[in-house]
Image (cartoon, rainbow, N blue to C red; front, side, top):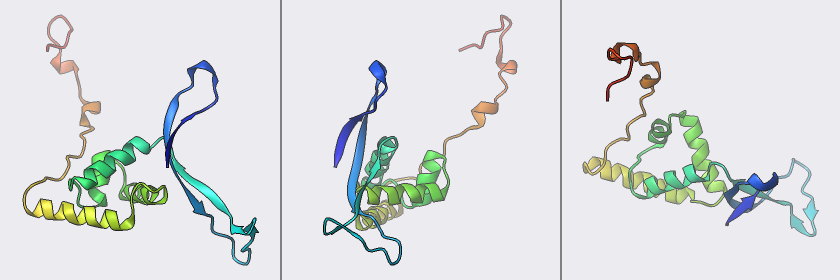
Length: 143
């Protein structure tokens, strides 16, 4: 389920899209209590990372990615974070384990056929770049 959520905070409130799925909460051992005759339920949701999860889904469906390492490289995060994003997408109902398995297999087939390349890992060395040697005589960077 998706909806737009407005958080309280005055006239400058920002509307965020939210994806959520109603799940049965696991009980602590020996505490299988029922709420009105049913297992206790809670919302598993994602709000702020939804755009990123949608982008991952689009890339997986297109066969652009072959594994979690490529997701990590693309977004400059750890493989554990990439795995957590995949699991979050499953928990909120954006995709299923079977779909992820199929999409990775599709990506591997496309890569083997030479139809795709591994995503470029963003370069962060520009942050350490020395601009002093690029200044012209007026002190401006020429373009």
